[in-house]
Amino acid sequence: MSSMKKFFIFTVLLFCSGLIFAESKVYNLYDFYTELPVIYTRCNDNEEISITAEIALAYNKNDTAALNEIKNRKIEIIDFLRSYFSKKTYAEIYGHKDLIQIEIRDYINEKILTQSRIREIIFIKLELLHL
Image 1 (cartoon, one colour):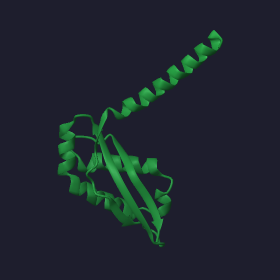
Image 2 (cartoon, helix red, strand yellow):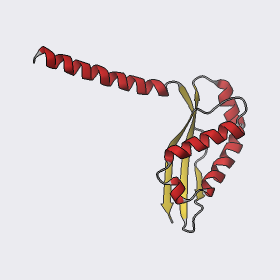
Image 3 (cartoon, helix red, strand yellow):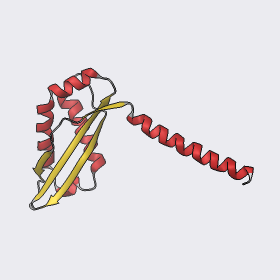
Image 4 (cartoon, one colour):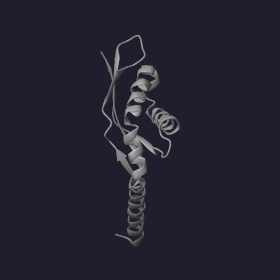
């Protein structure tokens, strides 16, 4: 194998490993609260469409104040999530996962939490089912 090919392969491998490292590094900055129950509700449509949502809340790694505030506000967060999804139509949910994550994060940060911040909303499960 020529030295030019070896250099190219090495460069590609180095570049790819850097991307993998950079991507995993981002998630290493967070801890995840996964103790919220699965949310079951229906869309705000004429059709009967059920929603199943299982959500994890990402907060800064080792931020015990954030963890404690999330635990203390758990009931309010659950109430908000049920209300949020039951007010949405199928069209507002389907294909808009990124927008939903932002809306949920922003609402929790602005209206429920007072001392800490959620950094990301992660969907463990988000299903829409026609009944």
